Amino acid sequence: MRSTKLGSAVAAAASVLALAPAGALAAHGHHSVKPIKPGACRLSLSADPHVVTSGESVLVSGALNCLGGGTSGQTVTIYERMAGVPGFKVAGTATTAADGSYTFTPAAIVTDSVFYARALGRRSVNRIVKVAPQVTLIPPAPEGSTLLTGLAHRVTFKGSVNPADAGAEVVLQREASTSSEEWGPIQGNVFVKLDGTFSITHSFAVPGDANLRVVVRPHGKFDQRGISDMVNYVISQAQNANLTLEPKIDPIPFGQPLLLKGVLKAGAGQKVAILGHTFGTPFVKVGEVTTGAGGAWELTIPSATQNTLYKATSGSISSASVFEGVRWVVTAAASATKVTSGTPVTFSGTAAPIRVGHTVYLERANLFGGGYHIVDIGFVTAGGTYSITHDVIGNGKEVYRIKIPGDPLNQGSASAPIEMEVAPAALAVPQVQPTLPH
Image (tube, rainbow, N blue to C red; front, side):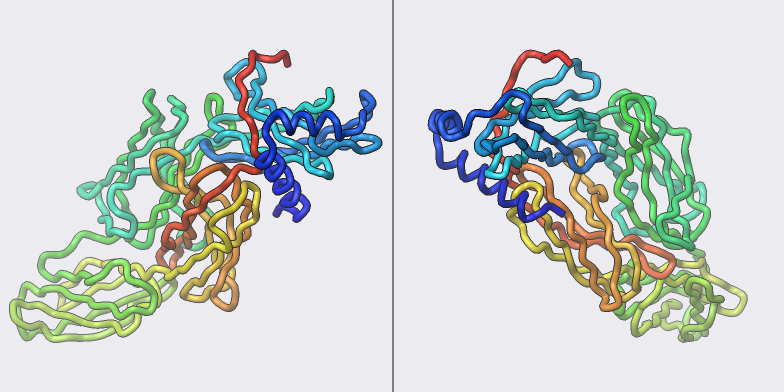
């Protein structure tokens, strides 16, 4: 979180720049600031966060401290060098506040970058920002859909890596069913193409709830791995034509009634038992019905609370096992939607069911290609709420959402998008200058 002091500095710098013309501001700085002895100043700089996804921004901040004061209204020039581009370029300027502090939001960063600042002949240390490639995943079906097991039902995950990183290995991962945030590869040996795209064709063998993501391993100019947004699916077996079973809604929100239905080929007047099992339990009978006209049958579960694997039986005939996902119900709101870059914003809401300690992700929309990526993390409390305070950094429109990942008990779910208007941390003047010596 940023301090109140930093917020005051931003406000002070912004008001000065907004109210005074450039000439007047220069004159003010020249006449009102006391003479400063050469070498009597120190200039600090930090760049946060230290690791970002390509297309995000950082907040550059620091302070000018001089013996005898006189640090208000001084111009600080920020320099940036991007990986693969020789030399430093001027990224822009900021003006110090009364206490000598300054802030600046550079343009979105697409690759590893180094920053430093200059003011009154003093130079700050270098600060490095590491950048991971942005990975956009195009799933084979809308999230929450049912995918079937077996080679005949294999599906293709497509996507892109930006900036393009041809030759980097792409790995499809599935989260372990017994724990959170333990991911294992289910398919690899796929590589990013020259145009930055990739394609993974996969057949599933294990029914159940599946959290999936794509990881691009460090390669080339990227020493940070890229991670796509997570998608959640229901994996089920193909239907048996002699006795079918299908949910009316799949997945279903937590606590809602669930209608199961199907058809027995043997016709009307036959008994059909419906069995179900949740994580860690055996199959038990949850109901029994008699088939109607054409062998059709239906059964309503009053309140669905957990992911359940269902099957129907009639005599020696058994349907395929069908997984019914019961998804989290999540609400989300932000403490502010119009902020200055670097302002802490609290994202909070409710989650049902109440499962203390369950992970809650804050995600930000990708700059290119659609989709989201994780920027912060929180946890469900005993009251069924969560709260994540995050420094919103950027310039312009940004979109966030809350996502709760699935687990063996419940399927993942995401909130509605939250749009933010982010103003730059300081009114900076971008400049174009020749390359400077290192």
